[in-house]
Image (cartoon, rainbow, N blue to C red; front, side, top):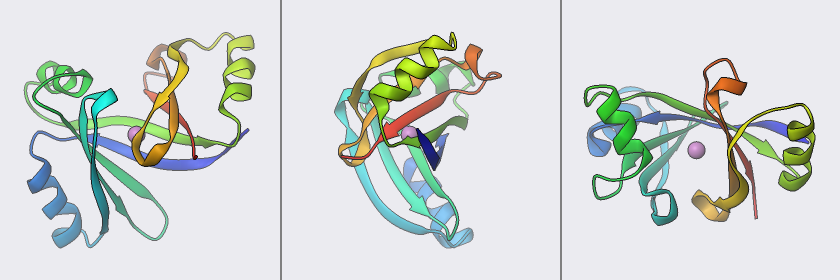
Length: 135
Ligand code: CO
């Protein structure tokens, strides 16, 4: 079952500058930074009272976020919304029965030890959706 929104992710071309904007200018708290090698991303998580944000930057100029930046002429943008699941395998089955298309439907490693899968934007009004289950 989907139990809430875990985070909203923004692709950024300059991670340090984006962290400074969110912490110094917008007043969010930096939870931490983590390189997720399996996803080829360098991430930073920030929190406000109601919402968490993930800033995603390509690791070593490669992977899906580099492709996203290339497609957006080097500029960042809204990348995905992550919903929290309390049973990822069950939610995959339920959504597959409803004909949702997954980019990858076998859970892989996400940030903070989570397991994640990705719903294709064509199934969700053009928005890339991450489903995550905490360890
Ligand atoms: Co995410």
